[in-house]
Image 1 (spheres, rainbow, N blue to C red):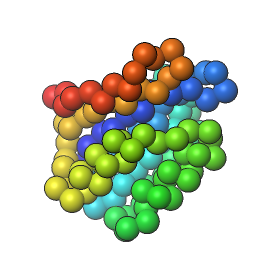
Image 2: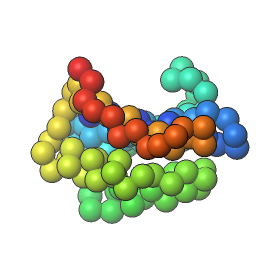
Image 3: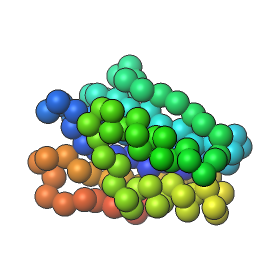
Image 4: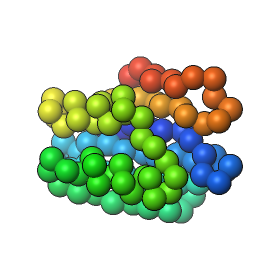
Length: 108
């Protein structure tokens, strides 16, 4: 599964939105957490590839006060089109204390 991770805040607390494309499952996944990776998810869902699935996930993020950056959504669309798989990670940072959006590169 590709991983696109957004560092943000919810109610002033550090939060992260992890999204990705599963080559094996042909689906998109989204997990929203406050705190560390090990914390219990506030939201977690996996949906089969459909035209509207990223719109659905964008709406779910907005319900938590999070706006998914356009470059993150575009990267997820590309992941699906190119069937990008494991070990493809990028970070996006929209925390209030961050100076700019970090669209990161690929980590292996």
